[in-house]
Length: 400
Ligand code: SF4
Image (cartoon, rainbow, N blue to C red; front, side, top):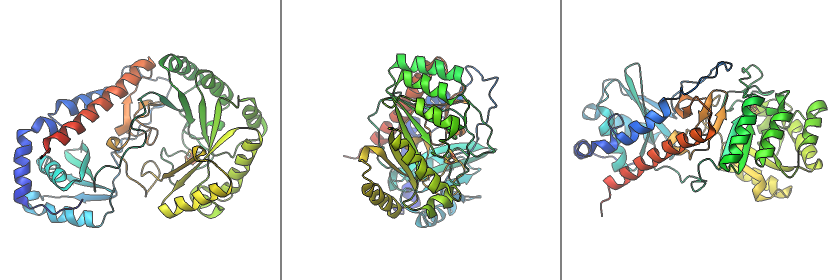
């Protein structure tokens, strides 16, 4: 909700917030600092063979507002309101200033106006606060226990270079393979931990020469879903596909639109037709196929739903999601860590909070994968800290 709050109110809130400062001051809050500790001590073990590429991007925002020398006492509030008026509900707005004193006032203002402060980062002496216009959306999958699903990024290279790829994959991206040895150990430990489903993604997993062994190892541990663009099912890769146990393997194949134009616009000329051939082949080979569309608007989602209805694709075999403003995307839904219920995600660089943005520093939990139980515990601890912080914020303004 966008409500203009006068400076006096903001000041008052700021003062009352100061009295409760442990709950809202990121620097001094034990909850937040505990979270920071769990996210910022990722060096339990290095990966000497892996080329570490972790993008130090902070949370992408739809609008960047450089406060310059302004504070709430000297003209920041009108600028902030103007920025929100240019935004849509759910957008992220970043406020950047070299005056860290803005933070408590901004947080108080967010609480009064029912916007949400979702991220704070300091870079070269300037603080960047990211707030969401409006309240955080309800999280899908909130009740799923952390660690029940496990994501593996087997590699980052891809035969395509989609313009919205959330991890910047392309034919030129370094492979950064997880490797069969680590995958085998992950699979064994995941089974011991009771992981109920493993998602295998990249990059394009079928680019890997040892994908057959990787998928077999994972499928022995739990049912698996392989995310693929469906374009490489020929020759040895087709043989790999045919060798997979149908009862343990789901193929999630990307198709963004009912007709080629929009899909090809994002992914390259001719890709829709090749993906559709892959889907038909996978159906013919007896696989469960989940069709996954990445869309920009509700209208695009609705159009794709009609297409799926026409092809008798059931609800459980559909994924329709918005473009995330991560990786290569220049437009889309900006997502902060606080917006995402964690899904343990492992790449060659370590353990991440969620597969969307699994190479971004703000989502890195630990550089060490093993023992897997400890990685899961680290993600759970971080989530508990985050949830506790949210609960405490909620109780500060429990007015009745
Ligand atoms: S979105 Fe998928 S198919 Fe496209 S570049 Fe990224 S990994 Fe490859």
